[in-house]
Amino acid sequence: MRFEMAKELFQGVLAFPVTPFDESGERIDLRSYERLLNHVIEGGVHAVIPLGSTGEFAYLSTPERQQLAEATVSITKGRIPAVIGISAITTKETIGLAEHAEASRADGVMISIPTYYALGADEVVAHVEKVARSVKLPVMLYNNPFTSQVDLTGDTIARMVHIENLVAIKEATMDVNRISLLKSRFGNRFEVLGGGFDPYAFPAFCLGVRGWTTGMANIVPSRCVALHRTVVVESNLVEGRKQHEKLLPLANLLVELGLSKAVKAALHVLGLSVGPARNPLGRLSVENEKRLAAVLVDLGVL
Image (cartoon, rainbow, N blue to C red; front, side):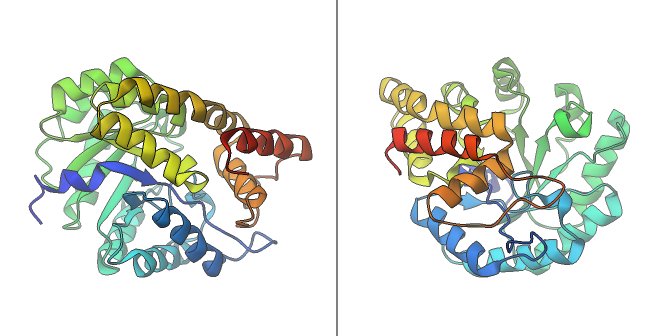
């Protein structure tokens, strides 16, 4: 693949699917997962990225992650691209997951900076370069300082422009000025995506972002696709703002309640059960499920 063309992989609406479990939360439910992926594909999303934060990757064993990666590629192949989340604490484990994704014929991979220990800039660059060079797949780097304790600055990113298959940067700091600066400095080199916090999708689109990674697309994929199309493709900011404001109560509530368990609760309300979040994450209270249901009624999807 010509990596300068691979940026197109990270344009459009890229859904972060949840990981369905049985009612005990101990076993991945692949039948429910296939139903979920069919749901988001039929809603028009442009790609899926399993094993992100929404997919509870941190609570899955390596064999479970490999199982889900293989299932994702099998279900989506020939329909939409599958970009596999491969984030892990060590470089060795991350490389192993990257190599497995490539062997599974995934279309790309997403990595974030390892959690727990706050890495220095030299360590970040070395980690990303070693992982990216271990495969021939397009790589998206996810800046999420809320979990990694490391905020990828423009100067650190500039030290990675030579990594040929690093083609996209996902910015999740909720800082629209940061997105603007990244687009200005690196827009010709990297695809800069908005994501992590859906309430900021519309402002990001207005700044020229073409790719949106979203957990909300599990619930209302067609609404997410419509917002992207209206603003990014049709440049209709007036109508796009209306759509954004309609989605905003759901987007804000998902963030407030905890994305993965709130998305799962919303899917349950819609009749697309995917089981609970895995312990130690708990279930939403009955009161909060009612709040979600009320928002879905207002959206006209329930």
